[in-house]
Amino acid sequence: MKIGTAVLVIVIVAALLWYDWSSSGGNSSLIKYDNVPVSSTDLANLESIASNMTLADQIGTGAVATYPAKIHGKNLTIDGKPAVLYIGADYCPYCAAGRWGLAIALMRFGSISGLDYMTSSTSDVYPSTPTFTFTNTTYQSSYIGFAEVETLTNTYQPLQTPAAWETAAENAYDTGGIPFIDFGNRSAQSGANFPPGLLDNHNWQYIISQIGNPSTTLSQSVIGSADVFTAQICNIDNFTPASVCSAPYIKSILSVG
View (tube, rainbow, N blue to C red):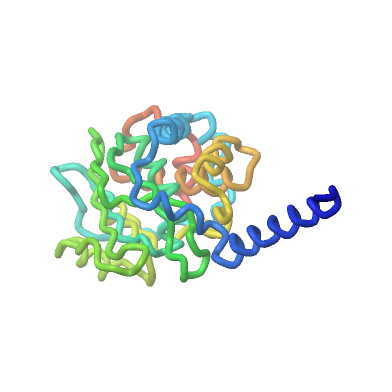
């Protein structure tokens, strides 16, 4: 085969591969990781980012412009601790975006085990957005409780059913759409606070590498989201631990949120 012909063949094959990638939603090759446990390396890197208070302080709210709305309900608790309630679904691209910031915020107050990789639906907007699922997670914290409900799989099959109290909170404070996140009945958010498209065409390792760099758009969005959620948690757990909740950005967020 002549060199010119070989180059032409390579170009055609590359074009076909790109067409297959782009026409099926860009991130379609990631779906093989759905429901696969997050690797110890990725989990350790996320925990390191979560504990990096210098990074959190540097970014503050970052690119996030929307905050959870203040609400006034009966204190939401789990085992006597103020609770964070999350209701979403694996198919939902806005939940996919929201879980990144929420997972990092929760890691600042405790530990998450059982976290799995997940991608959003291949047929929704922002198809196959890389994220995690809270379906099999266990959360341990001395400060807060965490309740999670993923109602449908990313192929729209039934998954988890909310308890009566979870449904009551959603009915009372959800302003439309998922994810619904309730911070102790003191503040609540419906939807994501940054666009899922920022995660498009990236894998988990790339996203994690980017969010640790404060100069990137992904870091400004994901860490900004985590910081907004962190402030809500500090507001319900008596601003503990001080190593997290004494940061200047916490009061700044709460003063306008």
